[in-house]
Length: 213
Ligand SMILES: NC(=O)c1ccc[n+]([C@@H]2O[C@H](COP(=O)([O-])OP(=O)(O)OC[C@H]3O[C@@H](n4cnc5c(N)ncnc54)[C@H](O)[C@@H]3O)[C@@H](O)[C@H]2O)c1
Image (cartoon, rainbow, N blue to C red; front, side):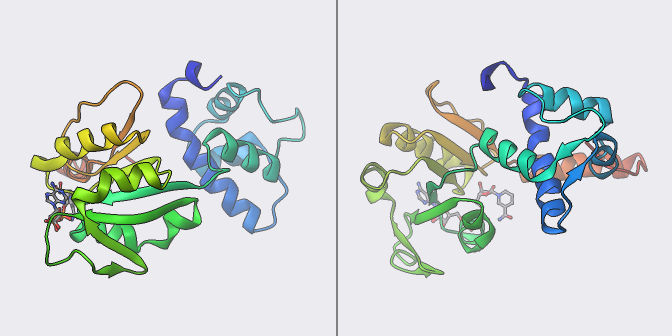
């Protein structure tokens, strides 16, 4: 099922999921595609088409059952399980990611940070230890780690990706401004903060308001 759905649809799912979570917290039991459209900015027909990719959850004249749709989208996004993760590069960004409890609340548990700087090895961010990067490969193998986060400088990012590939983990969340080469069985999701900022700059330069996507 998942493989046939276009990546542009997949990229809209987290937004649906976020709004549905907020509706659920407000005790709202059902919502129409029109109301979801007002919230998300996507058209109602777009929303119906998107959700139809997964079998469609709505009923004509009723709309969507919020808790059911929230639960199903959570399953589709793989959020119905806990992932173990590690972070390579325990500098500014690595520590910030480790410090943020929201990832853990969503099921992404950082078991350890790794760095090559002896001055910070042994320190803890919350209760998460910074270990020597030389120990990383074995740690990943022994602790059922599925996600490797990269917050090293870009010059070191490919080496870290290679170690991740050797260790057998399945997903890389890459914050370094580098295009990584990895074996086909590994998924890379890039978070290029600078590129995002440059898009903002593009719109500012043209005095364009609104949401850039
Ligand atoms: N800090 C931000 O807000 C920000 C914004 C945009 C992009 N980035 C990107 O995120 C990455 C990290 O940025 P930062 O500001 O945290 O840098 P930083 O210099 O504060 O931290 C990098 C850390 O990586 C460690 N490191 C270097 N080589 C390593 C290796 N081979 N193995 C393990 N650890 C290693 C360093 O010792 C250091 O602790 C960079 O690629 C940067 O371009 C950061």
